[in-house]
Image: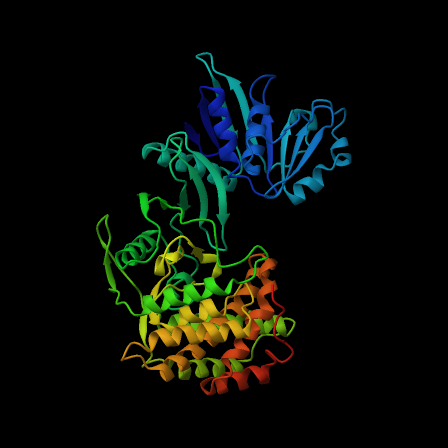
Length: 512
């Protein structure tokens, strides 16, 4: 492979190499991408397009007819993909008639014979040019925008990582991406051994400083590379919890090949909570809170990861998302007054002061349904697979119990919430030093803190990051805030929210 600032060149020795490139481009493309395939008859354009489509469908036998006569073939896959063959296009103006613009707005366009389109294709596109190598095989050149090219280079770097660690020719399929910068792939070894998961989490550059010269990620202690994941994974596994085994790693590049703990979650086929599984998750959490964790964890690769504190600055910064994003949205763009902000922050200083005597332990931080794997064939705490803990801190143990019983993404009915709380408390009462009243006060405070964060975060994702889908969770997380207000310690915050108009008209969400 050779690179220039605007292109990548590859030698594909066999048809299998062309198929593999198509499968890997399926991991790269995103809605809005136009992929133009240039080359003569028999150069491999259709082979690559067919491989890309079958990989996106995860179906080796997906019928992919040539669109030579229909001009376009549409596929409803992870997102829509339109496969165009413009060989018979008589005029570039016909592109509009066959729905090219709409297809590009909604998904990805694969275009064979792009020269027939004249200047009608978008300038920001991926151009893949096929040529025959006199020495054998094909020579491929990919030109793209810097952002697209970075994606392509990343997926090729992952292939080199896999090849170097004994996974040459392993099949790769998209698993998921999340609201962060991490992405995941399924890896199928060619020897038929158990499926692995590839975590792709490149080190992130610091964002703009927003307070005391620090970016948001540093203030709230978000992991900026994979070293924290490796450290917490090791600590959990040493104590008997079901965190994934790490098979291979390149921590500097942000690549981990890890154990696949299974496909099952805490939810049923309709996305509703399965009570038994939630109760097992809470029992696992109680066991976690009964175990001591070191603040400094020695890494297998050398060095030490220091688990940060869930400190006052981090708690307040997260809670401020409510006043920075939710309140202006609620008021049609009118921000909080200086007096309202000062009172809000003073209330949180008082609430955080009350956490001084709260039980502190390892807080996984996102202990809720998307990040918990159900392993029904196992026993005890091994039934609960833990997969998202790179942002773990030392803080009030109540926070993770809030995360699971007030699941941000699914409605856990109040009777189940009460049962989960009862289960957890019954297990913790076996410990002579457990202070139940103090724990319940900390639970209410952390419930309010998490709800403030999420009710602001949903708006930020919509307004700043153009991800409106998270707003569907708003009614639920406002309900969670109202539940927190049932504890007398939250009276000052409840009264403040009433005065500024937060939570006045919201009611308990419907289960979904």
